[in-house]
Amino acid sequence: MLVGHSIGCAPPLLLAQRRPDLVRAMLLIAPCCRPVPFKPFVLLRTAMMPMIGSAVRRQMTTRWPEAIFRSALRTSAAPNPVPEYLAALPARHIVSAPTIEAMAAELSAFNADMAAFGRLSSDLPLTVVFGDRDGVIDYRWHSAWIQRNHDQAVFKTLRGVGHLPHHVRTEVCVELLELLVDTVSIVENKRTLVA
Image 1: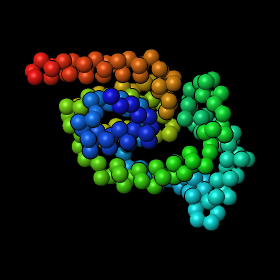
Image 2: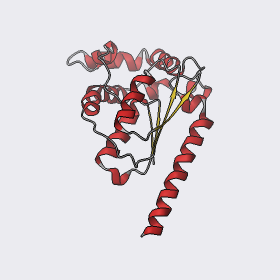
Image 3: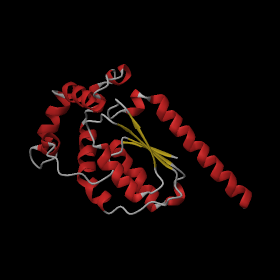
Image 4: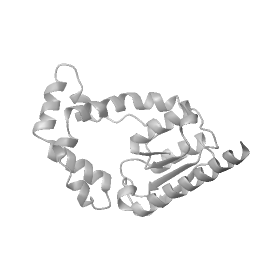
């Protein structure tokens, strides 16, 4: 059972395609999985440029981590309030040189990896949850891509919810996960009976 959120849905999808024997079901939360049009992400791209990148990363991690972190949280949570437990996270632990480098690596590899993506087996239980007020991704854009690549995916769209459904409507995401666990258990029991 794999669960992913946002751009973090790409690795589970790729694993399910490349090694279907390892994946029994997936819950994708606000997935960013379809190749996306170019976005400048000026600060992130500048932070990775030869010669000046290290200086930019140093400024980001020593002078601006709080501002960068708070802005990212507000954008992700909108239109919902930022949950207190997320707001309490230490910005310097989140906005660090390794996380900036990881985000840049994701950004550079994402479109190529997802453009080469093929279909998933219809037998793989796949549930997708989106917020209809997501300002980070266009849920219609990504759900159309998922439907083309998995014709049995189950979709749940939450009204009034942004990019963090698992924080805003946790109970719904837990319920969807429990349903997937039950589905996998039924399938596994049938396999055992047949064997």
